[in-house]
Image (cartoon, rainbow, N blue to C red; front, side, top):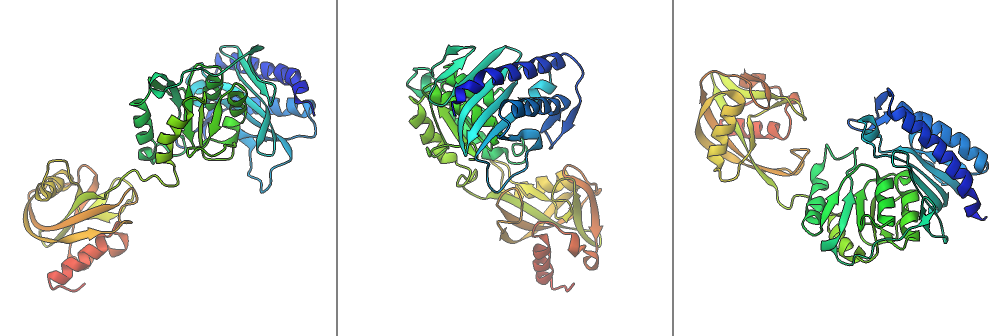
Length: 401
């Protein structure tokens, strides 16, 4: 089929939906949460509805996979549309005029037609495989910059993961920041790719994008003379979880960096973190705190050792910060190394036994601090590996529980 025949009807549809989005931008909009920081608006939903109705008229036999109504399928249709009705929803919800409609026609995992439209700047990017890439009807090409240091790059962070695992993504960002002219982060992968295609950026990288985020954009980049791969330099398609797009001249330099941070192999911490835990004898029992943060439950007072601080100093400080008690260290119980003791990262904990004095009060990470007699220890509600630590303590103290 001659896909270029679809450009004009698709252009009319996208411009119509873009006009609706621009009008909505200046009116009240309902905002909903799909995740902790992942938003969807009533405009996303209405735009998707309009696009799906129009695409069915343009190409009735093609299936439609769209962001707000997508359900994973075991097999992809032979020919289908990938639609992001509003890429940059968070920007839209905050009245930041940087968002776009992205539509791609796919043959299997290969885009054959792509269109990206920013209604606020009235810039319409489109491409047909083998026919070049265009901006508002004019041919576009990637930039000719041939070194990373002179390059302007762009990126984004996955909204579903950045809050829980920032250290998986920040190191790569940090390295690029020191190797190029600058890095921009505007919040719309479709527009980022379009800007690589027209030479405004030299390169783009991002993990965990969805197929509708990149399908149209990668065709724009390729048809404008650029290159698109995954973090390792392998051929890219929209169903992979990492992407690098460039003007092709700096691609190898980018891959040499991104390959070190591929999500399947990168470990943000090479060594375990040193921590201390303190068994504080106080009154007729020992002190346990109930944690404010995940994992919630009863635990020994303790925490991370600060730089330049001895283990003993850390134990005294942590005890004071969490229990308000001054402690006198009695002896070192031992060191514990369990990669699963903390769900965030591997730690090695040095455990001290101490006597406490003062007024007991839960502070800092402690929602509550309480004295438990040895026979009252809440074994079933202890977090980390603190049950094992207390069993070792009781054995050393020649007590039974």
